[in-house]
Image (cartoon, rainbow, N blue to C red):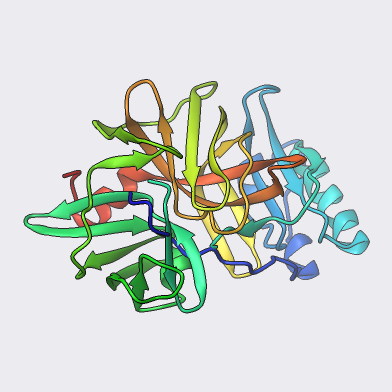
Amino acid sequence: MRRSPLVALVLTVLLLVAPGAAQAAVPDRATADPAAVLAGVRTAGTAWGLDPATGRMTLTVDDTVAPAELTALRAVAERAGAQLRREPGTLRPLIAAGQAVYGGGGRCSLGANVRSGSTYYVITAGHCTTTASTWYADSAQTTVLGTRTATSYPGNDYGLIRYTGRIAHPSAIYTYPGLLTVYGTGTAYIGQAVCRSGGTTGVRCGTVTGLNQTVNYSTGVIYGLIRTNICAEPGDSGGPLYVASTGTILGILSGGTGNCTAGGTTYYQPIAEVLAAYGLTLP
């Protein structure tokens, strides 16, 4: 990741709700599969998955969920035997390896430098790459980074930018300041100590608090995400989640709630899935 801004930060706030979806038909609690029940929830501003701290499925809601939707969601949680939890702020994708990239008037963060043969790419969030075809390394958009070649969003949240400019692209994470060499990829586990790097708030650290999480943005549903207690803000999207002691990348930032003043929750697309989808390797 270079010092130049490397990933567009999407300021879109997830406010839309679908009351009907929140009230999706569910079986009796005594026989219900909690995951199957919660899979029917499509209300924007919600996320669900297993909370390893309690051993229960948890349905979280943000501040945009209106009282009527909240009532319906409480009923869904009750029927699923799940815990309903409120998190302050707005659950949103955070467009706005860690340095900023720019495209279409937005800013995100570069997640990883990868390659296919002798062709090199940037991995970043898919909700970023949907916004522009040409990406730049500076806010004035005079230094070309490359061209979007793939996007998977929603469902997933990752995209590729093929390098066409003459910017150096080491296999490293920018750590504000300094570079951490990337030695490989890994699979996240509960309680793991992790950090993330982003163009807006730099490096922040915490722990993995959930796996295989489902998030309902206003722009679509994303599945199979890593959850952490690390904060982030718009513009950090696409930046890497990594293990500082080993230089191992685990995922790229999709979105979250809260901010880095009061604290927050963030969700990440596992990196291994992205590499497998496009046949990519680290340089």
